[in-house]
Figure 1 (cartoon, helix red, strand yellow):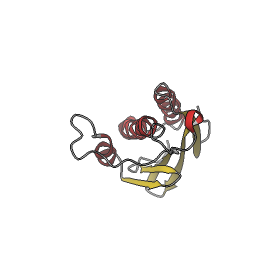
Figure 2 (figure 1 turned 45 degrees about the horizontal axis):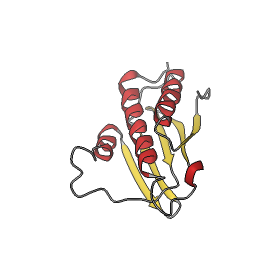
Figure 3 (figure 1 turned 120 degrees about the vertical axis):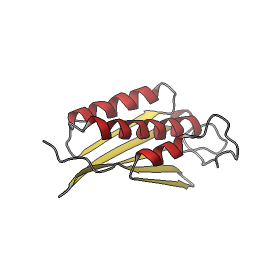
Figure 4 (figure 1 turned 90 degrees about the vertical axis):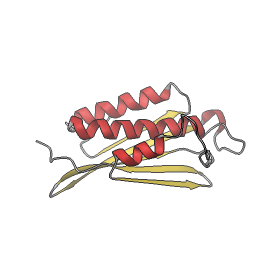
Length: 143
């Protein structure tokens, strides 16, 4: 777990077991920050979804960079404003972007869910991977 009031970073292998590792790491940091449960659950769920997408989709296409040693990088920073604080989280992989299916069936709800839970969501696919940036809603200043 990160022990900084301003930043947190962790890298996990592209492996389904890493989803729980990243989630526990980030949950511990939110607890360390004394982030309010209401907003913290939203942040944790959105980060979990971004990491899940990166792990599920980044390493299994021909031309993906990194092969068996591919990692998902998660870094976050807290910004304090006069009105409170927010968290900006970046989740990066080194895979190739795949457009979502026109009819994803019962899947495909992760991106809309992230957009509902966060103040801002930006998805930047590129030649060297995909970067998802999540910005939380404003939370009260630390007690």
